[in-house]
Length: 332
Ligand code: NDP
Image (cartoon, rainbow, N blue to C red; front, top):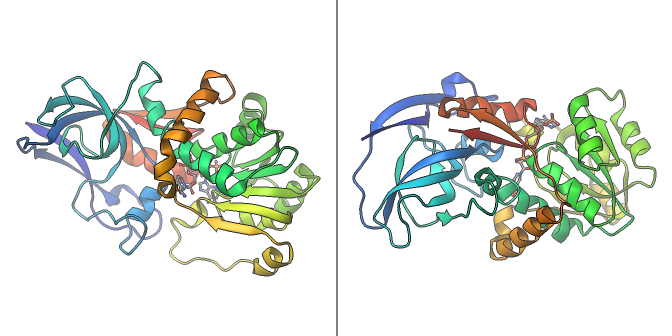
């Protein structure tokens, strides 16, 4: 039996393009004991995948040139040689970018698609949801009445951060890259104010106007000049969960910005980087709480879905030009 797969053709310099990806058709191996044959129905594309295209040490190994890319997916079990898995089960976990794969069942988790739509396990009930939940609550520690600013506000993580901060009783200000996103966040997701960082003539001033009492928590998804402008408005004893730096992922050199240390020092600000995997022992707690808020109607969700396996590269690159609102998903 043959599958179609998408491999890393070469390591990109700067923004990846069509030459970064290679489409192949390969013969599937026979199943060994402990293996399952899976057919993905949904793939998640996430900004961290760009980092995995580079060589070098990080918190997750780089992709190998000539080998399939991989990422979060939901898949149907077609055949099984693994205890506890039977054909027809639906599983989630990290899978190769392939139309079918023979993989070890270790690390894959069965999901119940009667409880929530399958794609939710890649977003609100998956890695992005847990990132928002733990980053905001554990590091940001928002208190009722405080002002929480989140960048990348209309994306998978940001849209949840803003809503969770509202549940905590905070004033929530988002930063996003289009007027449509600004309208969506204020009209449908309860944000108190949203700044369009692409059209604001003076971002520091726009943030000051949106945050008359200053910024108590800044959930940083993007870095760069957006974060410089937020930190210029930071309050005494503020907390900054450092979640992502997407503004830099395609840069070949990191630009030097303002030196923020004096500001952090003199205002007693806590800035802490984190990787969601740090919280793996508490994932069940996070999923339970997120699911409860969905059931209570307190947490809303949106996705941008591209259709067809071949759209995976386009979907991934679309994250870097803001093509998505909410979670970017590929339905195979
Ligand atoms: P998103 O769904 O937010 O997609 C990325 C968004 O980033 C785009 O839609 C775009 O929105 C915005 N963006 C792209 N380029 C830039 C830029 N140069 N400057 C400012 N904004 C930009 O992705 P996720 O929600 O999945 O991830 C958000 C961030 O969180 C990423 O940096 C990611 O790496 C990080 N992350 C970290 C985790 C961790 O464990 N620490 C786990 C998960 C994600 P717009 O139109 O507004 O520009």
